[in-house]
Length: 495
Image (tube, rainbow, N blue to C red):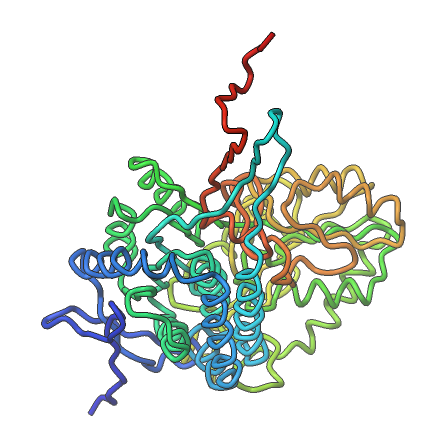
């Protein structure tokens, strides 16, 4: 007899509900293929009800003083901190990242909610001098209304909270559509705000496929901003769909992130960073290190050290603290990554890995060996996003060539340079075409108090996290206060 799984509904207007006759789907543990829980596959009617709830809740939430909104966020952060171990295990069980990263995912959510709670006492505008006497000029930030937050599966608590906390502190109401294969984590995100006392309708959750729930959200004229994190092709469709009604659409998309090792790089430190950057979260980060660009003088030495370290790099049960890398997130992810590995075999030299792991636990889940290719620049594996534990290694002869290779891709999210030369470090900060540059650190490891985002096909120019996060969810209003008690005309000559 099949084991029963816990069933969850939609969170609309402050209550959980399961529409009669609704279709359902089940999430799976990628390490074991065991079912996690069952969820409603939302319909356009469900989206309409969620948007209506958010739209009706907006005036009261907008009029709640921002510091009071911040108090609710701070309570949410405290609730999540109290449940960090439990929620971190849900992240690992449902998404597959190792338990230290699962709890790290939750900690990042906690940190950002706390940071946004403080923004409730800031939300800065500007004051500027007027060209006229007895006139005061300023700007204020105002919320947009009901907004849609559409999130991916690779950071199932951190990224939703990047969006939700920023939207809430600025006075917006939210309809949240998570990735279907991490819907259990999305329930935990909603619960922390429910427990913190968020008013009904301010946050709503509709689970289900992007082609149904996501499209209905984007098409609803009451949704004024869409915040989307995901793949480039899906992001392009979201952008085009939102443009039909002139919505603000914020996109965080892919990456093909380089680490450059110059001839004076500290090799043990650099290899530490490459291992974490390339194989942390099984390479399933938009900031993952997918290209390693090495100066020819240290090329052989670096690869020898990388091989030595990968010889003792445990892949297995992500709940075991000794495991360095768990499974990839799903059967679809596994298939796509293995297809890219086959492409790589035809156009590059496979140095190590390249197989689906089998036997024991491996037969139950979606496990792929850490894979390293030596390749020339211009191959598909050196330029296309793979989103898995696959590292392309390229040899260069100079700093200038390294930068050219690093920049010659469609993406521009994260980048890194290892060197002891301070002049080249500062040149790289200027030269590398990316929204993020690390010096002597890997391409992953963003901090919540700083803006996150990229250029080119990585997104459409906005930034999440840091104080810049509020820009996505606010409109700037310019205000002129004339206390001269007479008509004054700006930009008109008066003799």
